[in-house]
Image (cartoon, rainbow, N blue to C red; front, side, top):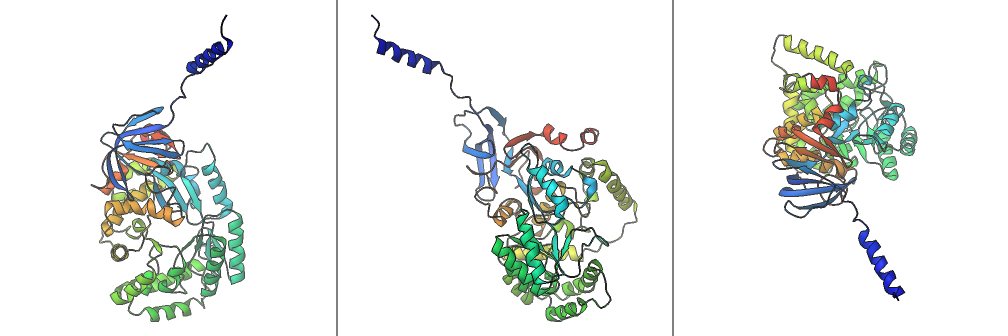
Length: 477
């Protein structure tokens, strides 16, 4: 007679042994050189990601159990890049094309530094949708300006918010917080009292602060209270030997006796004082300013500031960049390109560009953190493409290629206190990565030689990336 217990034990063993092993999951990029600003260079590695997490980094000859492999032989893997200064809704002609443009150039995160929430929020919602193929997005809402509004919808697009009193400023920031902004951006026409109220409100609500240096204040006074400053704008005035005199003149003109619009008032002050301030540069005075800015990230947007030194239409790959744009943008930008190339060639005014490179180099030399941003799409800035131009200019300013990569990976993550989740290729961090065909440490321009992009754990091949941007335009090049 069969022993019932033995029979049942055999049956259980048989059933368990017949069950298939769990199917392997995850994707491995094998035999690749990994480069990031935290860990440096790691050769002969295999990087495994599963969903939106990097799950393993191991030597290339270690055993694998994954569902997909990508051969990284002879290639270089860097963290996904940030463009730390963009305006997603500044130009309606781009429509829904920006996310695809950014990804096609390896930009997996963007910081939107100014736009009306009525336009920005629908874009953010689309970009954050579960099924969206899109960069991660962080946003500020409108530029927080003063009584005189620069971007007022009259002389310039309406992307600003008027805050004439400290009470208005606090109410504005409380509303922005309730609507989910990632940070705030203080603009140039605020008074010191309004600036102080904005800083207090943002700190109370746990919002990082981005800023232009207000014209009513000096960089060394305002800078220590904000987390980032854009464009190097107005810092030149605090580096001049006659900084105090320039400041007094500004305070008088900011009373606006002629009733100028905010945009015209600001422009008139820049035109009046920027070049004289640069001409009166004083190293000792500037060292004091830079010391005050030692912990404030600078986003110099060198691509924009040095435009006259290297206009994008003089770059060898400009036509390729134009081909990726929607027709509504590509056609007028192509016309501008043709007109500029056909115009009589004159010696460009590069004083501000040279100054910007010089000051960025000095800031970097003193350990001031630098972030990589472009102001896309302003100034013929092709979303995505222009970030690589920014990296080139940062290297020209004195950063090493690895430090330039740091400005577009680690620094932005630190700004949002996300350095434990993003910015480098480490186990447990987000699966945002760019696979390159050439070493960016040999030439920072190699960041454009993109073989594949991993965004939020999704692998996009070169064919996938092409499909994100004007396919007919790209294929017809």
